[in-house]
Length: 271
Image (cartoon, rainbow, N blue to C red; front, side, top):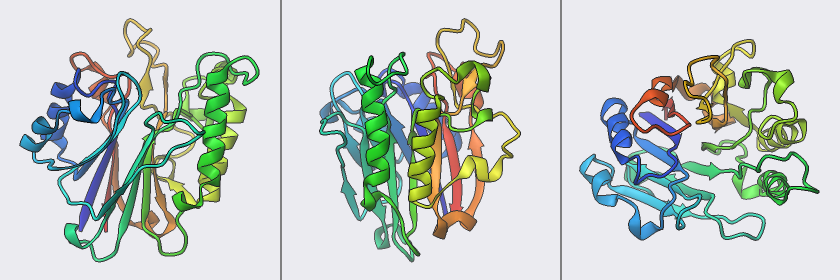
Protein backbone atom coordinates (compact mmCIF):
# COMPACT_ATOMS: atom_id res chain seq x y z
CA UNK A 1 0.00 0.00 0.00
CA UNK A 2 1.24 3.46 -0.91
CA UNK A 3 1.39 5.84 2.07
CA UNK A 4 2.33 9.50 1.62
CA UNK A 5 3.01 11.95 4.43
CA UNK A 6 3.78 15.67 4.27
CA UNK A 7 5.19 17.88 7.01
CA UNK A 8 4.77 21.66 6.83
CA UNK A 9 5.27 24.48 9.30
CA UNK A 10 2.39 26.60 8.08
CA UNK A 11 2.88 29.60 10.41
CA UNK A 12 -0.87 30.06 11.11
CA UNK A 13 -3.23 27.56 9.56
CA UNK A 14 -6.17 29.97 9.45
CA UNK A 15 -4.17 32.73 7.77
CA UNK A 16 -2.78 30.35 5.16
CA UNK A 17 -5.61 27.86 4.68
CA UNK A 18 -5.90 28.83 1.01
CA UNK A 19 -2.32 27.78 0.18
CA UNK A 20 -2.81 24.63 2.26
CA UNK A 21 -5.82 23.83 0.09
CA UNK A 22 -3.78 24.61 -3.03
CA UNK A 23 -1.11 22.16 -1.96
CA UNK A 24 -3.57 19.46 -0.95
CA UNK A 25 -5.41 19.62 -4.27
CA UNK A 26 -2.14 19.25 -6.17
CA UNK A 27 -0.26 16.73 -4.02
CA UNK A 28 -3.03 14.75 -2.27
CA UNK A 29 -0.88 13.33 0.53
CA UNK A 30 -2.57 10.69 2.65
CA UNK A 31 -1.52 12.54 5.78
CA UNK A 32 -0.56 16.18 6.35
CA UNK A 33 1.32 17.15 9.53
CA UNK A 34 1.25 20.86 10.35
CA UNK A 35 3.26 22.87 12.84
CA UNK A 36 2.76 26.39 14.19
CA UNK A 37 -0.98 26.17 13.61
CA UNK A 38 -1.36 29.07 16.08
CA UNK A 39 -4.96 28.44 17.08
CA UNK A 40 -6.95 26.66 19.75
CA UNK A 41 -8.49 23.36 18.75
CA UNK A 42 -12.00 24.83 18.53
CA UNK A 43 -10.80 27.40 15.99
CA UNK A 44 -9.05 24.91 13.70
CA UNK A 45 -10.60 25.00 10.17
CA UNK A 46 -12.02 21.48 10.35
CA UNK A 47 -14.81 22.06 7.83
CA UNK A 48 -12.39 23.19 5.14
CA UNK A 49 -10.22 20.11 5.61
CA UNK A 50 -13.23 17.81 5.55
CA UNK A 51 -14.39 19.33 2.27
CA UNK A 52 -10.92 18.57 0.92
CA UNK A 53 -11.30 14.93 1.96
CA UNK A 54 -9.35 14.97 5.23
CA UNK A 55 -11.91 13.84 7.76
CA UNK A 56 -9.59 12.47 10.44
CA UNK A 57 -7.86 15.08 12.58
CA UNK A 58 -5.64 15.01 15.68
CA UNK A 59 -5.07 18.41 17.27
CA UNK A 60 -2.84 19.91 19.94
CA UNK A 61 -3.32 23.66 19.65
CA UNK A 62 -3.04 26.82 21.71
CA UNK A 63 -3.98 30.44 21.18
CA UNK A 64 -1.60 32.45 19.04
CA UNK A 65 1.49 30.28 19.42
CA UNK A 66 2.93 26.89 18.49
CA UNK A 67 0.35 24.16 17.84
CA UNK A 68 0.54 20.92 15.87
CA UNK A 69 -2.04 19.01 13.87
CA UNK A 70 -2.33 15.80 11.88
CA UNK A 71 -5.02 15.73 9.19
CA UNK A 72 -5.57 12.50 7.34
CA UNK A 73 -7.59 10.80 4.64
CA UNK A 74 -7.02 7.55 6.55
CA UNK A 75 -8.64 6.79 9.94
CA UNK A 76 -6.57 6.56 13.11
CA UNK A 77 -6.53 3.73 15.59
CA UNK A 78 -5.46 6.07 18.40
CA UNK A 79 -3.95 9.47 19.20
CA UNK A 80 -1.49 10.66 21.84
CA UNK A 81 -0.01 13.93 23.07
CA UNK A 82 3.23 14.29 25.02
CA UNK A 83 4.55 17.28 26.92
CA UNK A 84 8.18 18.22 27.32
CA UNK A 85 10.19 20.33 29.74
CA UNK A 86 7.19 20.57 32.11
CA UNK A 87 5.57 23.06 29.76
CA UNK A 88 2.08 22.96 28.32
CA UNK A 89 3.03 24.50 24.98
CA UNK A 90 1.64 22.45 22.12
CA UNK A 91 4.59 20.81 20.39
CA UNK A 92 3.70 17.14 19.87
CA UNK A 93 0.89 14.93 18.67
CA UNK A 94 1.03 11.36 17.43
CA UNK A 95 -1.37 8.91 15.83
CA UNK A 96 -1.33 5.22 15.03
CA UNK A 97 -2.68 3.58 11.89
CA UNK A 98 -3.77 -0.04 11.56
CA UNK A 99 -6.73 -2.11 10.47
CA UNK A 100 -9.03 0.90 10.03
CA UNK A 101 -6.60 2.25 7.43
CA UNK A 102 -6.27 -1.22 5.90
CA UNK A 103 -2.64 -1.55 6.97
CA UNK A 104 -1.39 -5.07 7.52
CA UNK A 105 0.90 -3.93 10.33
CA UNK A 106 0.59 -0.97 12.75
CA UNK A 107 2.29 2.31 11.92
CA UNK A 108 2.93 5.16 14.39
CA UNK A 109 3.39 8.76 13.24
CA UNK A 110 4.84 11.52 15.46
CA UNK A 111 4.51 15.22 14.59
CA UNK A 112 6.89 17.63 16.38
CA UNK A 113 7.50 21.35 16.64
CA UNK A 114 10.82 21.79 18.45
CA UNK A 115 11.39 25.21 20.08
CA UNK A 116 13.16 27.71 17.82
CA UNK A 117 15.47 28.84 20.60
CA UNK A 118 15.59 32.62 20.20
CA UNK A 119 18.58 34.52 18.86
CA UNK A 120 21.35 34.13 21.45
CA UNK A 121 23.05 30.70 21.41
CA UNK A 122 23.90 30.72 25.11
CA UNK A 123 21.59 28.93 27.59
CA UNK A 124 22.94 31.04 30.44
CA UNK A 125 21.80 34.23 28.72
CA UNK A 126 18.79 33.00 26.76
CA UNK A 127 16.03 30.95 28.44
CA UNK A 128 14.56 30.10 25.01
CA UNK A 129 17.81 28.46 23.95
CA UNK A 130 18.02 26.63 27.27
CA UNK A 131 14.47 25.35 26.67
CA UNK A 132 15.41 24.14 23.19
CA UNK A 133 18.43 22.18 24.42
CA UNK A 134 16.39 20.61 27.22
CA UNK A 135 13.66 19.69 24.73
CA UNK A 136 16.17 17.92 22.48
CA UNK A 137 17.56 16.06 25.48
CA UNK A 138 14.07 14.91 26.45
CA UNK A 139 13.38 13.75 22.90
CA UNK A 140 16.40 11.49 23.21
CA UNK A 141 15.45 10.27 26.70
CA UNK A 142 11.78 9.56 25.89
CA UNK A 143 11.90 5.84 25.15
CA UNK A 144 8.28 5.59 23.88
CA UNK A 145 9.36 7.82 20.98
CA UNK A 146 11.99 5.36 19.86
CA UNK A 147 11.16 2.38 17.66
CA UNK A 148 12.76 -0.96 18.28
CA UNK A 149 12.96 -4.11 16.21
CA UNK A 150 10.11 -4.33 13.73
CA UNK A 151 8.32 -1.18 14.96
CA UNK A 152 7.09 0.88 12.03
CA UNK A 153 7.43 4.50 13.12
CA UNK A 154 7.68 7.84 11.32
CA UNK A 155 8.76 11.09 12.99
CA UNK A 156 8.20 14.37 11.18
CA UNK A 157 8.14 18.04 11.92
CA UNK A 158 9.86 21.36 12.19
CA UNK A 159 12.77 20.23 14.36
CA UNK A 160 14.35 23.69 14.10
CA UNK A 161 17.85 22.28 13.65
CA UNK A 162 19.84 22.04 10.43
CA UNK A 163 22.21 19.26 11.51
CA UNK A 164 24.66 18.89 8.62
CA UNK A 165 27.05 21.27 6.85
CA UNK A 166 25.04 21.38 3.64
CA UNK A 167 21.74 21.82 5.47
CA UNK A 168 22.59 25.54 5.62
CA UNK A 169 23.73 28.06 3.05
CA UNK A 170 27.03 28.69 4.88
CA UNK A 171 28.32 26.27 7.49
CA UNK A 172 31.08 28.61 8.65
CA UNK A 173 28.89 31.70 8.90
CA UNK A 174 26.09 29.91 10.77
CA UNK A 175 28.11 27.99 13.36
CA UNK A 176 27.18 30.61 15.95
CA UNK A 177 23.61 31.09 14.70
CA UNK A 178 20.76 29.32 16.48
CA UNK A 179 19.61 26.25 14.50
CA UNK A 180 23.12 25.26 13.38
CA UNK A 181 25.29 25.60 16.47
CA UNK A 182 27.36 22.52 17.36
CA UNK A 183 25.49 21.91 20.62
CA UNK A 184 22.12 21.80 18.83
CA UNK A 185 23.25 19.62 15.97
CA UNK A 186 24.94 17.19 18.35
CA UNK A 187 21.81 16.87 20.48
CA UNK A 188 19.49 16.34 17.50
CA UNK A 189 21.79 13.75 15.96
CA UNK A 190 22.11 12.04 19.34
CA UNK A 191 18.32 11.75 19.57
CA UNK A 192 18.23 10.39 16.03
CA UNK A 193 20.95 7.83 16.72
CA UNK A 194 19.49 6.75 20.06
CA UNK A 195 16.17 6.03 18.41
CA UNK A 196 17.78 4.33 15.42
CA UNK A 197 15.98 6.76 13.15
CA UNK A 198 16.87 7.30 9.49
CA UNK A 199 16.73 10.83 8.04
CA UNK A 200 15.04 10.31 4.67
CA UNK A 201 16.43 13.49 3.07
CA UNK A 202 20.00 12.49 3.77
CA UNK A 203 19.36 8.86 2.92
CA UNK A 204 18.28 9.93 -0.57
CA UNK A 205 20.27 13.13 -1.19
CA UNK A 206 24.08 13.06 -0.94
CA UNK A 207 25.64 14.97 1.94
CA UNK A 208 27.56 17.00 -0.64
CA UNK A 209 24.34 18.61 -1.94
CA UNK A 210 22.69 21.64 -0.41
CA UNK A 211 19.13 20.98 0.85
CA UNK A 212 16.81 23.62 2.34
CA UNK A 213 13.21 23.77 3.56
CA UNK A 214 13.16 27.28 5.11
CA UNK A 215 14.06 30.77 3.94
CA UNK A 216 13.84 33.83 6.18
CA UNK A 217 11.16 36.47 5.77
CA UNK A 218 13.92 39.03 6.32
CA UNK A 219 15.15 38.64 2.75
CA UNK A 220 13.22 40.83 0.32
CA UNK A 221 13.64 38.12 -2.34
CA UNK A 222 14.33 34.68 -0.89
CA UNK A 223 15.66 33.39 -4.21
CA UNK A 224 18.53 35.90 -4.25
CA UNK A 225 21.48 34.18 -2.64
CA UNK A 226 19.27 31.19 -1.77
CA UNK A 227 20.17 31.48 1.92
CA UNK A 228 18.13 28.61 3.27
CA UNK A 229 18.27 26.01 6.02
CA UNK A 230 16.89 22.47 6.30
CA UNK A 231 14.79 22.66 9.45
CA UNK A 232 11.94 20.32 8.46
CA UNK A 233 12.54 16.59 8.69
CA UNK A 234 11.05 13.18 8.04
CA UNK A 235 12.64 10.27 9.89
CA UNK A 236 11.68 6.60 9.64
CA UNK A 237 12.46 3.56 11.74
CA UNK A 238 14.74 0.79 10.51
CA UNK A 239 11.72 -1.34 9.61
CA UNK A 240 10.60 1.34 7.11
CA UNK A 241 14.00 2.39 5.78
CA UNK A 242 13.75 0.31 2.61
CA UNK A 243 10.07 1.18 2.08
CA UNK A 244 10.64 4.78 1.01
CA UNK A 245 9.85 5.16 -2.69
CA UNK A 246 9.87 8.94 -3.11
CA UNK A 247 10.86 12.17 -1.37
CA UNK A 248 10.07 15.74 -2.39
CA UNK A 249 10.55 19.28 -1.12
CA UNK A 250 7.94 21.62 -2.65
CA UNK A 251 10.34 24.51 -2.97
CA UNK A 252 8.11 26.71 -5.12
CA UNK A 253 5.61 27.02 -2.24
CA UNK A 254 7.92 29.67 -0.77
CA UNK A 255 6.78 31.98 -3.60
CA UNK A 256 3.04 31.40 -3.22
CA UNK A 257 0.70 34.17 -2.10
CA UNK A 258 1.28 35.05 1.58
CA UNK A 259 3.62 32.06 2.06
CA UNK A 260 4.97 30.42 5.15
CA UNK A 261 8.74 30.73 5.53
CA UNK A 262 8.80 26.89 5.43
CA UNK A 263 7.77 24.67 2.51
CA UNK A 264 6.10 21.25 2.42
CA UNK A 265 8.29 18.16 2.66
CA UNK A 266 6.77 14.87 1.49
CA UNK A 267 7.76 11.21 1.66
CA UNK A 268 6.09 8.25 -0.02
CA UNK A 269 6.40 4.76 1.49
CA UNK A 270 5.19 1.34 0.44
CA UNK A 271 3.63 -0.01 3.63
